[in-house]
Image (tube, rainbow, N blue to C red; front, side, top):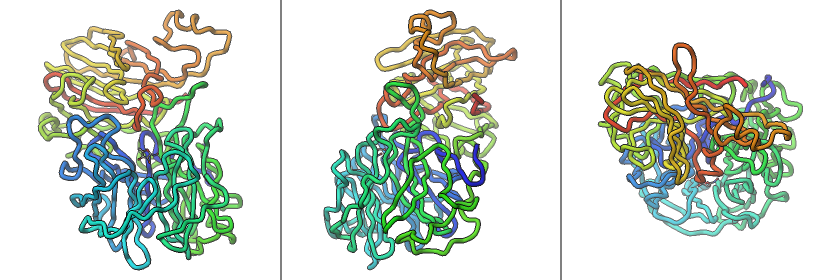
Length: 547
Ligand code: 6LW
């Protein structure tokens, strides 16, 4: 539940890591990493920092996004930064597969964005800042900076060493901000899992030396049992009312020991207070309270707000707890979506793997249906024709109405080529197949009339069983989900939706589709695919399911 003085985290649910944010007037824009998926770098718009709607993808052409066929899972596009300067939006990111940083610009954040200018420099996590002379600085993990010509793609000075945090591993995600008379530098450290943390330093000069803050890291959930973990990779923004906020990544861990997460790293929001000129944040929760004493609309900073000294509070800015205007991409509250494939193009939330060749898909071959044409013959290797959307809730059901024609087509929930559960139809037989690491197994089969069929994948958080139930009891109990032990608390059910209701072909332990098993930087997605011939999809439906 949220009320007027609270809002719900994550503000962008599902695999949306490494958020970066900028404000232009009353509008906020946010971008995230996209790895091996195409198009790349989803871009969101908000008026309140809480409710985000995806307005496009920054890298939506192969001339901007080179993801060769052998791009590894979790390769491709790493952490982007978005800024607005001199009438233009600027987005810089790293394509780790080709080993280059790329910078693109746009006057309209919904696109089109320019072709890239490249910087062949080491490290990851590029960020941009303009100094008081109008010079542009590129900062990178490590942490170091370069003075650059952002239009020409040339380096004018550097590397200039900066400040590398408190000594934690992987100093990364540096962002520089001009606030009052200071240059503030945020650095994430400790790695992007449970050791993640954010530290701060400041300097009078953009070239340093940087003085660390009095309490570093000033944001971390490491070594706690808070439900939100791995908090880090933060970017700072000042709201229209003068208040300050961090967008950051976090995970919603499940299970007892070790905890695991299945939705990837998600985008969270936390208010920032300034104390004696340094940022202070409280722990990041799934429902965040507004700062003490706030009116219903989240308040401007208090009088001791330190360096903010900026805009006067404007009434009503940053309202909280609104219903998500864009079902499925907003806060992890109620909301689902249905795509009838009646539009002229695919919605921006749909992604393909590595490329989306025009010959692989069509919305006009069979009007009102999405037709996919097979390329690869298996989901176990790169090359299969697939369009995917993110899983954004722990408890949800994705369903699809598919006509396989003479082909083989289905619905998958996947993290990568080596970790996926599929339900597919071919020649009147529906089959459930699971691939986990070196293992591949058929878990269930059902004969159905030929023609269109509705397939579904439902995920469910299972409450921990009482300790009196042993693992052996559970595994041998009739109807026990395959491989589910008492500590498991996530199941994946693969179903045919018949007129009489769902027919469950298999119920599998969801932990095998978690980041802790699959590794990498992404999260679960649902995918519509074809591995033989051509098939058409009439609709796709995604619903969170009440617990
Ligand atoms: C990203 C790095 C990180 O570049 O993970 O959380 C890497 N931090 O900053 C990939 O998302």
